[in-house]
Image (spheres, rainbow, N blue to C red):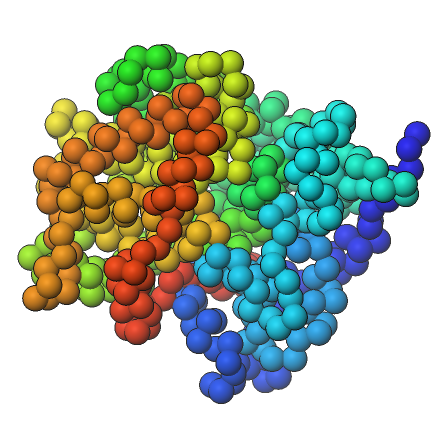
Length: 548
């Protein structure tokens, strides 16, 4: 067998350190004169809590175990995103710089196109730490390696310098074994049979890299009060190919009353799919109808979802076979969503939305726009119509940004259609104006974020269609509702066609032309910065915060 060279000892050392810097000691207090304080301040501190009185005694015992597993996922993501955490942290003396490194899981600013914020640090590798930094795309594509495009393998070099694959289960053998044991302890405590089955299968998946059975089991959960999204899931971190999944975790407490309000929408998916504004061949797939919508309070974030801008809704699983068989689950993270609405979206609207339209900025519209974004991931097409394989593989590094753009615009399309049917209440204009304010919020995530790039494309596309206009007297924007509907349908058709064709060159051109911040948009973003409006949130979280 060819000898494999990789640093298991490094990963073991990583896990001896806590996931967040200690905040209570005086030596870690952030100085007002620190040159990094301004960067730290673009994140607003938010406590992640929920009403634990509604939890059973077993559930109260499960949450600390889930948090321990989450901390392991956090350290695995550190390795995937950067690799040399210990030496980096040890080299820092300024508390503000150290905090910003923890927020970004490395020395590159995720809200500033991954530019380095520490002197002497070079550009972030497009493939993060999933591939050798000296590997070229030509070398990778010429290599005959089983599993090289797998979600769950690292690419490394052997002692002769040849490329090899290293499965996650081998690279992280000690860590996933411990996480698996903790998950089995959770399963023993679980009172809900669906949750017990999922946790048991997820524990096995961590040590086998076979996640589909547990994804299926996760889809079958209906009556659980707790949820735990955990493992290597999203592939945003791999900007070289979008092949490799990064580790993350969310510990979730279901809001049952809100979940009941949302349950009815999944049944409309097949009808909405048939009505998509695109040629029939691009909507021939039938979305799974066994999908459900739920609202949760999130009480712990770790790993990929905690890096830079924070996720406020989840659409999983990503496995196309599971999606076609069972659909997907959409989890709305209500407490995190409320924090972003109050601390970020409302202040943005006060600066950039015309006074006559600010009444249309509502939390219900923000919640619905976010929710239907996740629902819309299930619409459209997962496999190309011309035998180029899955959309994700055909579009490679551009797939994530286009998929996020699709979900945004089809989410608004779904709201429009359901409002016509009387299934969504309120003024439709609320959803459009709140959507417009949301573009200004999300574009601040920068081009390094798939969500940020998707919003840049949409801003520029909408601008060309006249979907909004700037009132020079007030310096604020007004939505033209009719033109916004036209732009919505046109962009929906364009994205779905590019995806269905697996048109890599066409997507690359769209990103190059519209996936950027022009002078006008940059001026508006500068105004938001001058008003000290935070870009995103950072969490105070854990067992003590919850009072467990």
